[in-house]
Image (tube, rainbow, N blue to C red; front, side):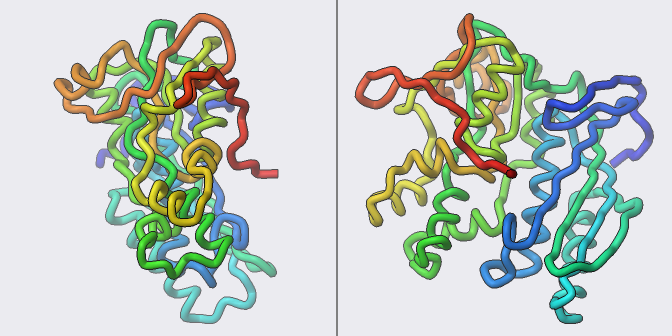
Length: 303
């Protein structure tokens, strides 16, 4: 990937998935031990990959491709030499396979581990923004959601060894996403609002509505729920909404467009229409029973 500075001098401050600094898309996402990852649950390689994905997803949500990274690692004093070496190698391979150049960073040590990435990317066209949603547009989700939330539930309830739900367990530990999806939206001429689903659908819908000054209405029956989340829900009697509406770390994209599913496919983009953008404010959902529910932000909280 070309690492030359962007030709356009664009600027955008805090409040979106990335800032735009002198034309660069810039994001910073951290991953804290025992909060975002646990090495008694995941391998060092999975923990590293998840941290990288969370940053790349932010770049994608703005219609860009990751190019450069600064890496900070707080080493847990109790990690042995093997774990430290595996983490270092995982970051090296994770950046390299994506064409991301590691240009600097820092290493410290403390009682718990922490990964901190500052990532820079280049927009492939006009950046996608949370403030871009317009009344009359359709709301889309890039792919099925709820897997990571279901996987977390499995760990918290001691069901992570269940062979029938290993797909959601794996998705929670090491999410696999279409990292070029946002760039593909820009290439397809999409210019609506966009945000990544890191903190849960309920939270990100509200971010999109508030930033764009619009009302969003979704339909529960149209939500593409990951089949593994449905399977877990049915087996253990858990409300599947806990996974797709209030769960986080799916790292799919939520976006708006004046297209339909069919016209998007004609442009080479596959996505699921889940609702519409309206005049007004807030977020509401038409439930499967036909009732209208107000949707408040109830996803992941960092505090």
